[in-house]
Image 1: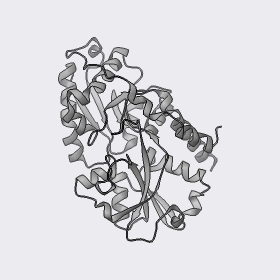
Image 2: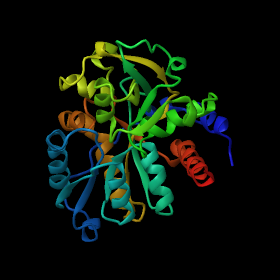
Image 3: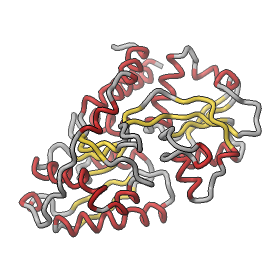
Image 4: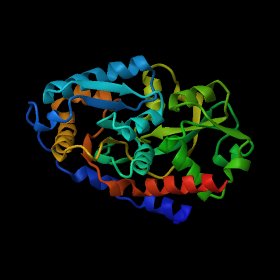
Length: 318
């Protein structure tokens, strides 16, 4: 089994920015396809840490555009948490979904590989990556990771890449025994919920996803800080960032691997062309936008898959 240090080194060495070099194709021609005989309804998974009303408002145009463009009914499947999309893929009840690297890795393990990455979201600088960040209230005396000894830490979700797997792995690589270093850890139920829990002093710190680009005062360009700032739920002056991870491979849109190749080709082409063809819809589903999409490959996510295997083995050993 690869060591944790080897896994994080492999993660740090991936050429995340290279994905931006792929030229986007034109939007595929509109019209019903032959694959629609087998895909009678396009069921779209939706992973988000927002409340239900905000999620629906953001994705309604995306759903309607897919349905009109390919001539098949489309339906949004709202998952209560990350595991909902995992179960939907395992039961073949979803055709496509957005997801983070850990959800992809666990679906791949649970379905014997019946998932295929289509496109990866690009940050504003063209990189196909983001970071996990640990944050605390700004009125505490916690200014760095060393100050977290004996304090409490909120994970976002057990299937979150940035809100659980990567920070847990990197902290262990740094020699921190998770079980004894912190006074307690727990799952807040999502990224937004974890930030609220820290603001309400239920936990001393939390971890979440961020582009780490742009103005910190605005919550950076993308991620959960930015979402909450834009909705008036967070003032960045109320929190302090005390740690950030190495680059993490960006979130993707993926499809079931057992679907027709023509379906997957159409979905790739549609999403690669979406930012230029329908910028408003792209901004809505990517929660503010970015530099578009690039072709995704399994190799980009293999280090996360290895981390997921190592985490599962560690749980079995306890």
